[in-house]
Image (cartoon, rainbow, N blue to C red; front, top):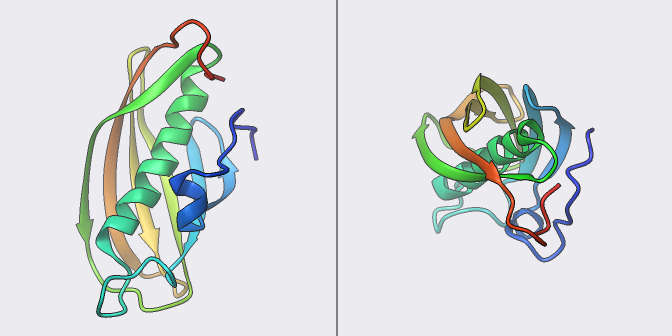
Length: 136
């Protein structure tokens, strides 16, 4: 996996249990446990799927942006197809468009049987980092 040049300690990524398995500007793969990320009925919370999608798309956009640049979320939408009740879900973000100022990704979240749980699309704005910031 490519180094993201920042720590996830104390972040939502850590709290949700998201693990990155593969990361490049073109494709990002990560997992997240269902346990601990459910709604009151014991099903994977739809917002948790969106957090996974935004994390993956943002990592890819940041890698594409390059050194001394940052990626910030501009738009995200998601369609929830089926419930996940346990185990781990896997998100795969695939670049749709990688430009100088915008990066967009299609993100597919699947359960352990490979069934689609959620489809999301995220667009990030790419900009120069503020002087002295923690940009990669």
